Length: 628
Figure 1: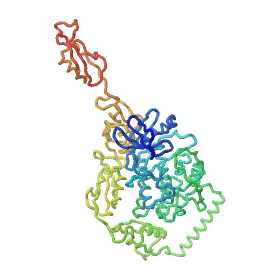
Figure 2 (figure 1 turned 45 degrees about the vertical axis):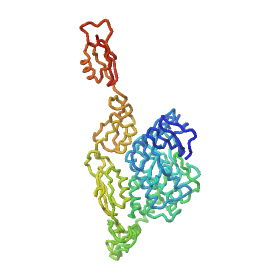
Figure 3 (figure 1 turned 120 degrees about the horizontal axis):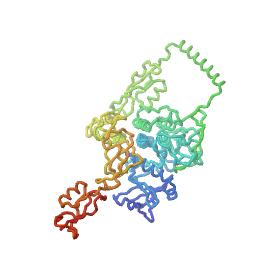
Figure 4 (figure 1 turned 180 degrees about the vertical axis):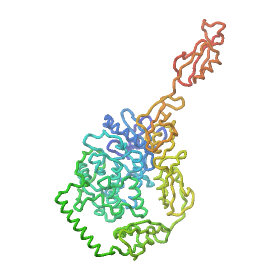
């Protein structure tokens, strides 16, 4: 970090002390929050961009989008504002390094380490997607790693609500980092969460082989390859990458969104299966390849890392089939008919020869055994894990057994070793997010199963663990399963109260509750809530809502004004009662020197300030004079 030669204090609160990084839109500083006496990250929009209302609006949306997301793998936003024409965002300061620094110079990560880190990123993206936010700039520079190995995703600068329209990139261009573009993003087409899945696949590819799949001499050249090129197999650069992890990566990198993982959660689940030695759903997947003649070579030029505007690419896309010549189709039809006839004749002559022997896969890893069985045309059925002296993931037995007669397509079940189990004290995950709870149990060597309920007890929130079996503190053994109960998607639950919170705090609470804050807040006076704090919400606190609902924040504009009643001609005890009924107080009482007072008016109020019929702040005082 570079020390700041002339530290500046923003909004009389945040003192920038060290420059951390320079991004595509802003500078990031280490700063001191003078009010709370803590270190924070201060992101400041470039001065030349602060004069552009379009960039300022994009910057504002970053704060709003991130403030709505409260997740252990997302960098939280504390505050945002403007100081003398300079716009800034205040975020949690992450002590650690970026994934970009870890990959600098073509360095790679091990398969297990890569799967673990990317699974955490996928958990963060999955949460954002469920809350209607697509990142659109997933890259190593936006993935931070804390000193204890926890992932934090940052920089939602060009994120947007899935259903909204974006008018802030130049016409005919798209914002992002070309090295990590999805094909549809490079074409300027509409994107959804599957675009982030592709970009995260590029990051995983780079972690495993030391370079991204496409590099070129300009961002335009790289974007073009995302649209038109084919992804080189990872084995072309690193033949030690496990086949299952390569299959996972290639499915994430499928050109067509329909062929990728449909959600970041699906991507994460397959990475966890790989980490646990279980068969992955992407095994044998070839979604990123398009024909044997696909180009496999790319230009050896360092990739770009900055977010920038890149011209959109045009088709044809490599995943779109071209219309074939009719004559070719006719010839192909004849060939198919002849082959079918030949196959039928062979079947009739070779009655029953589709039965073969069950291969012996006992002692192999479950991954290798699954590949062997699939290559023999068999189907993998239920896999039961049991404690055994063999190493974890080793096949103990199969049904049918080795040597038994078996038909093509028949289902094979397996018993697989969990290894030597050890006692473990189950951690209490109630109140944690589902992804955080799963990570916690996985680190303990425990398995987990999600159970859904529609019983929204007080304080219940979506994607938050309501209860678990066995309970926290109970003794279990590694490999045991913990049942986690969460709300069924679509179930209503009480809207959390955010009364007296700041708008940033309220947005974080509501975001964690799976809700979205309306971009148009309201105001109303309040005699109990300080100006600027939340005084109410629409819907109101504890109203039943569903995940994804929009909540409008109503902030206090300050104390309310009341109409001052007349107390002239009353004695002070009666005046006190009248003023109290209007939430006013009897103030200073003095004796009048007016010559108009008569003996009959002795002790009665002759004048008052403020005057009757005027407005005064709630709970303020009214001074009076009384006749002698």
